[in-house]
Length: 386
Image 1 (tube, rainbow, N blue to C red):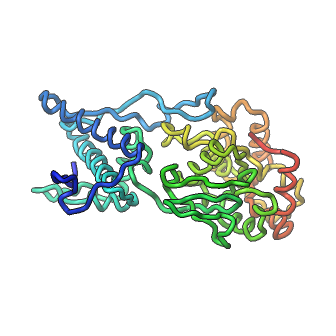
Image 2: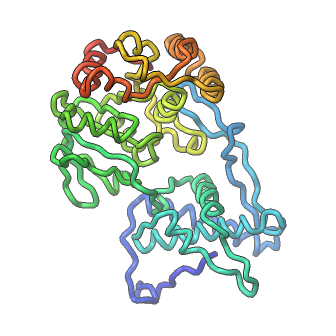
Image 3: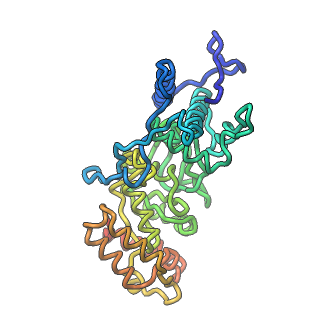
């Protein structure tokens, strides 16, 4: 394990800094880390092989909970053994990441996953073998630690790059600073990676719903047209497949404030998949679907019928390729889609059309067609896919 800072008898660390005040969640996460360390120590003291079991992050260990309507991780595990030559390094790396998270929590600091990689990267003396060859070797270990410690990456005090924005009729408190998201100009509020209640609190919300759009380019059009002001809503985007911070925020806006979540995404297999991840969760985060997924989210468009219904021009069609067709058929077989007639009809119509549509295709009608006619009409009609 990486060397952590020792406390002096006065409660300070040896470098002179004082330990951070821990939140209840920090206490729980540290408890999990200490539990792992105690487990390994106990095995060593018993002259037993140091080993631990990690829940398997694979499709075969994930199922759809029909009652809760989210993906959930099963009970299958994989062992990690110190005295197994093929597993010794990953055993050490897992302990290193857990130790690095412990240091961050105790200091009250956060860092990026890239920052943690550099925190932990060094040669293992007396050899010149590095702890991690590259970032790609470190990232899966971080995910292993999440499921092993039953803690989100954010609860390990790790963050990722910001890839989403928010604007609308809501006031929040972010790390003690009050932010009025209705007064954020053209750029909006950048949604951070860590959006847990200990960091972000909802102070006042007048919005009636959340409109989540797929891309920043579409979000910019809605923001410039002040759609959120005219329709009293919150507008978010995730720059493609939304990162964890955006998905967690959508979950909180729905579960804590009761706001409906409507998704405006591309009419293609990848737009369907993004909706699926927002609604039911993802395989990698199946162990935390109840905090990351929003089963009540609804798909507002773009729909396979919209080429004709909206009178779009021929130039906006994008032909489906073999990969698109294969992916669409896979999505149609998802347990949460397979028994929904409307979704089967939607996917089949796209395949019959032989083309896909991006949200921006609506601009071929007029620059503000999507903000002034398309979405307002669907909201009025309540015409969504569930």
